[in-house]
Length: 255
Image 1 (spheres, rainbow, N blue to C red):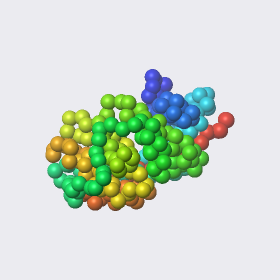
Image 2 (image 1 turned 120 degrees about the horizontal axis):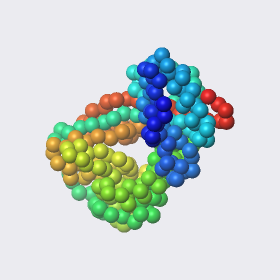
Image 3 (image 1 turned 90 degrees about the vertical axis):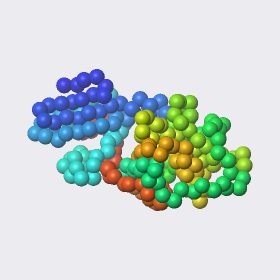
Image 4 (image 1 turned 180 degrees about the horizontal axis):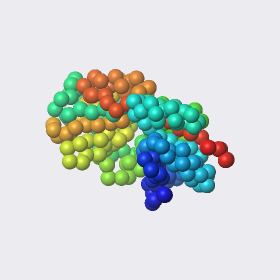
């Protein structure tokens, strides 16, 4: 049975919940389907066959999913069906009042602002990221990954999200987009110029001190980004929910 998007293919005790990522088609011209959840039971071969038919009929180029590192059944199945590993991610979290090692001193010739030139933002975002599910996939590559980060940062800037920027004199060198709902702050996208990695602790501290003390900060980060792993560890964040990212590149009549 196929329902409205996100589609849920379900037979018996087995299911695949998936969606077409329209934004990725618009931003990097790839037809990508994302598996949001899968339950492997006795009828899963029937579920997967219908999923394959959907992808082939709709000319899907890539399927993507993330699964818990403890879900050995799903991992084995994905690998058997031609999915390949591209990333490992963690969710990091910390209550603002529990943060450690915040940097509260001013830095010479550096300033904080709530706005920036959007073209400068796009240029910076397309230069500084070496990690992420697109960038780390050798079949997609860094060029398209950079283009996606550029368009993502533009959309975030034009959206209703909170944002903060750091400048060295008049040069944009870092940014952070985040969203606060009730007592939870989700860090959506942040980065620093590769010329100023030593200022990441300073800038992240500037972001954190603006938040209410009882808020819980969360973010999803790449496990291969050692610099970012160390940054959040420095502030006392907890690392939970490790997940493997898998992709499948579709070809005509392939299942």
